[in-house]
Each structure stands twice: as structure tokens, then as C-alpha cells.
Length: 187
Image (cartoon, rainbow, N blue to C red; front, side, top):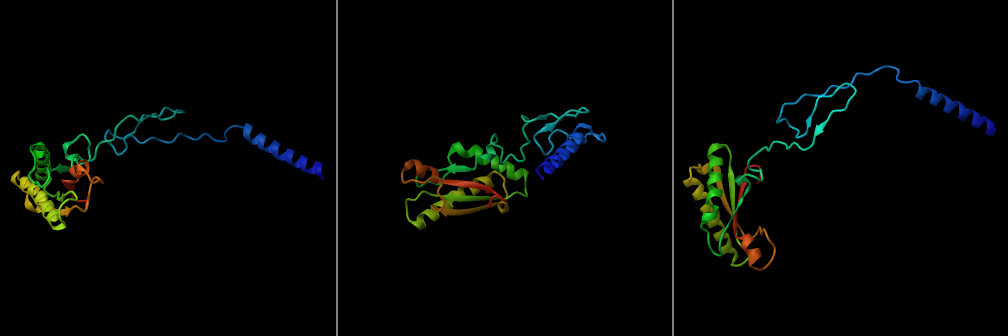
């Protein structure tokens, strides 16, 4: 009985080896490669395939940035304006930032912006809500003076409710005294 199993196994192995050594039954043509123009959806660019070859893909090609709002190289990706203690005036170092956002809104009249005024944890809840509102309103007024339509901008106060930095010292507080700029779809 044991020899019967070995013989059966031998037949199966012989059949498998014969099937593998016979070569391809029919030749299949290679799959086509889609030819894409530069700036297409994928950042990787396929090179033409030679018959019997493999497509080369350039992984160093950078995908096109969809929006200047998210491009780290653009001033528009900067979204926070920081303030001194108990202050709400936009410092001169942030005026170019606000001007760049104003230009973007003027050039894109269907875009809308939300400005969130924030404070550090010091002060009463009522004082912080009021100060946060004055901070967001100061950015809104500057945008309007630069030609942005009022209906494109909403300003709110979050007071001390949305800290950027945890901590109870000046380095944390200085990060929390700010106005944040958000565009429609981000809030």
C-alpha cells in the first residue's frame, strides 16, 4: 500500500514537471501604458515601455501643489497672527501676511474665510472672549481695508478655549495669543 502512494506521487510530480518544462502555450502581448501629460494626477511619471521591458517610473518628480493655501512655500500657508499681552493690533511683521490673504480673497471672490481670535488662559472668561473678538475683528477690518468684501469674512472669538500650546508660562501663552485664519472647507 505504501508503494502505491509513492507511485501515485511520482506520477503527479512527473506530470507537473512536464507541464512546467513545455514553455508558454500562447504568447500574450504586453499591456499598454497610459501616456500622461506633465502635471497629471500622479507625481510619478511613467516612461514608454519597450517590448518585453518594464516601465521606468521617476519617483523624484514632485506632484503639482493643488493650492497656494497648502503650499508650504507660499505665504498663504501661514495662518496665525500673534499678539502681545492684552493687545489686539496687528503687528507690522504680520501686515504682509494679511495683505497676501486679502489678495487671495479678492482674486477668489467665492472663497470665504473664518478668523478665530484666541487668548491665553489669564484673565476672566468674559475678558478673554471679548479680547479674542477684538483680535479677530482687527484682522477682518484690515482685510476689508485691503478690498475684501465683508461677506467673505467671518470673525469669531474662541477666548482661551483652543490653546495652541499647553503650559502655564510665557512661551505657551505667547503661542496662544493669536488669530487663526481658516478657509471654507477647513472649518
